[in-house]
Length: 342
Ligand code: NAD
Ligand code: WQD
Image (cartoon, rainbow, N blue to C red):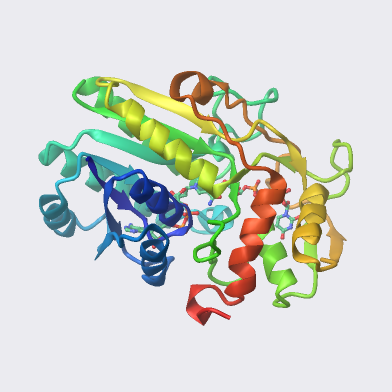
């Protein structure tokens, strides 16, 4: 069975994907600096899957550590999740974001090339589309990132596509995630943001466990049915399954770069998420109506048809599943991994 290296595998999406990879029979090794995660997530992955991936604590930008890890693990493919992901932080400190994300990718790809490992699955983002011309958004839509974080994703996509063009022994899948939410249904792993969450679902979950009095609701005057912004929320385990499908597809994709939207194709408003979370948590989840958050687009949802056509993948979990599973995690880990189990 194939061996894979998962960079950023201790993080939110990486850890859930590790579970899916282990359950599908892959040998899994993780490389993570633990800059935004905890080794406890890897222990929990082992508990769920019955096999613990080996964790190499290292930074993707560190060439000699990468060399050692690749020589030891000898992966057939790499899934590259490692990177910084905060939109506001990237606006405040763009150079840090460009250096961190671009260097991580470039140093990793060069080390893979030296070691003859030429299959890569990259975590891109729907943020590359910026304000879309039409909905749903397909992979051929114009890309126009509205912030430095989004630009790092688009530039890394370009870097990978150029590499594949230059050497057809390479193959790549660029996965543009929409809004990943939820957790493994066991409640043993989940999203564990440092500080005050910037994203909707983690904020709501922290209101439900009493860490904040109410949700700040950004914008009630959008041209949408209920006035709040619309997004394509996707269960993180559906996303994990999408990685497996992409990885399988790479085996027969020499010389090709595939780009796939990973979303459900369904738009859901902020108020619809609040109402589904109320149902799942039994908490009233009060909110305070505020102005729009600068940089937010009114509506964004995917055309996920390409992934269905080429990978046979589509999301199957509902908004109620996302809320139930996220609550299974947050209610048992009110302070995340750092606080231990409640
Ligand atoms: P996360 O922060 O939970 O996970 C990222 C992991 O990478 C962390 O464990 C962190 O410690 C590690 N890391 C960061 N820089 C590193 C480096 N240089 N070397 C080694 N390890 C490093 O984030 P996530 O939500 O799991 O996101 C994973 C990937 O998916 C990121 O690339 C992110 O940009 C992308 N993405 C996330 C979302 C989202 O909403 N969560 C949406 C679209 C794309
Ligand atoms: C969703 C909606 C907010 C928090 C971000 C990144 C994107 C991608 C996914 C990485 C918006 C509203 C939010 C709150 C609120 N990440 N909201 N109160 O902005 O669609 O996407 O995460 O690639 O790049 O930009 O997700 O969860 O932050 O916001 O009212 O406290 O919820 O205004 O309308 P977003 P989000």
